[in-house]
Image 1 (cartoon, one colour):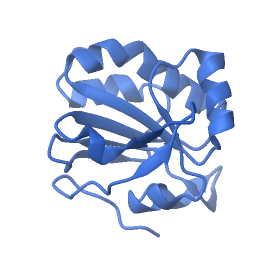
Image 2 (tube, helix red, strand yellow):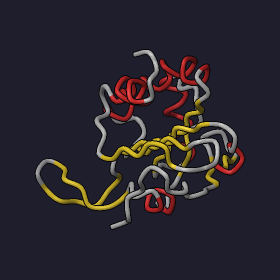
Image 3 (cartoon, rainbow, N blue to C red):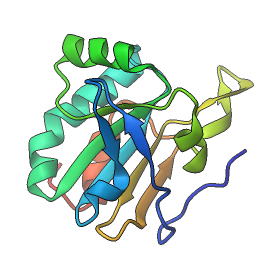
Length: 157
């Protein structure tokens, strides 16, 4: 299992393809705060709820200086369908090899319906302007997570 990240740790850099065929590099976002969240699968009920919550909060998050990136092991084509179907307004990044998921400790053993399985651990990180982890949250709930994160960040609910 990957080591988990803690506040103060350097955020592992990455460059991943997006749903529109471009690439996003964390290093290119230095100087801005970035919320990077990892989710198991596009177009599933929980992941859809979480993505829609981020979309609904995006304007206020951006106004507070945050960018949002969603990362899953899905292929860019599936992410494009997800974005279109649910009118998502932030970049969705594809990590089919799960290298970035592992680097962030967001892939490994987890409990699913009482069984231990290997998979994506729903996790959210806030990376500060210098590229360090400011917030590291593992095993977050899909529903209500964005509201909790906004509260944790001191933003209006």
